[in-house]
Length: 159
Image (cartoon, rainbow, N blue to C red):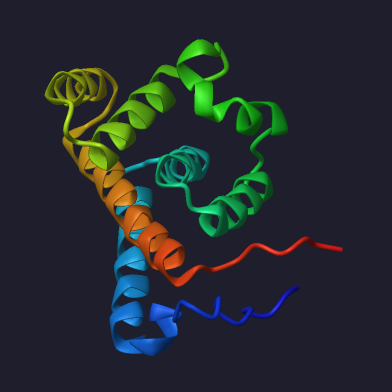
């Protein structure tokens, strides 16, 4: 396993520079993970949300981390490979599709019609606790995306 690499010369690792803030974010993520589990959300669904939000935010580090987590949880390479085009693939359950739409609406909330449609679709398959959990997963991974993107956390080739 690779250790945490040095930041790019023009960047600081904000997680290392402000460890109290980063640890608070980690604690939030742990709480959100528990909330999602308590609401009955499957681990694979949570990882799909983490990955889709990371794709939208262009976070290579989180994509690397959560691809590995999804594979460990039993996700297939086929579904991971087409996740960016999930609307055009018949590989995802109605609940996964609703969660992905809600995660996208949370990540890019400027499209009011898409946001309303995502909420409506989510209400068809999820409880209010589950809807809240999906939104919190998207919010939390979005925060980690920004930490990694702004820090310039690199992804190195594994040998």
